Length: 167
Image (cartoon, rainbow, N blue to C red):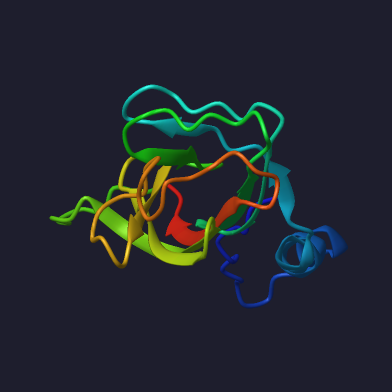
């Protein structure tokens, strides 16, 4: 259940158990509900990468119109990395704020483990459900060769997290 707009009470109104449950209990339950699993799709602007025997998992927690999403992709020995810049689908479409002039309005963090450890900034393009990672070092999006040439090995992974307003 998504958080609802609080009720406006009227002087002299008799409050029922159903109203209290809807206004207090149900809203509280939404806040403390567990995170929900989702399966992101790993894509690219070129030839699509393929997980092979790797894995991808994600979780999200929605509170009202705010989505907190986390995901992790673990490479397997048969993973292929495609071409182009990478993207991951999120569980919701991000809001396209009125008057915004930037492509990405929602930011988070990413980390990757290849030959070393790498950090990046996650951005969700407004009006889409696509998250992309930008390399701090190379100042461009992550790809098969940015921030490192990724290799198929079970100890390699990319994970990210981002918070955004749901459209």
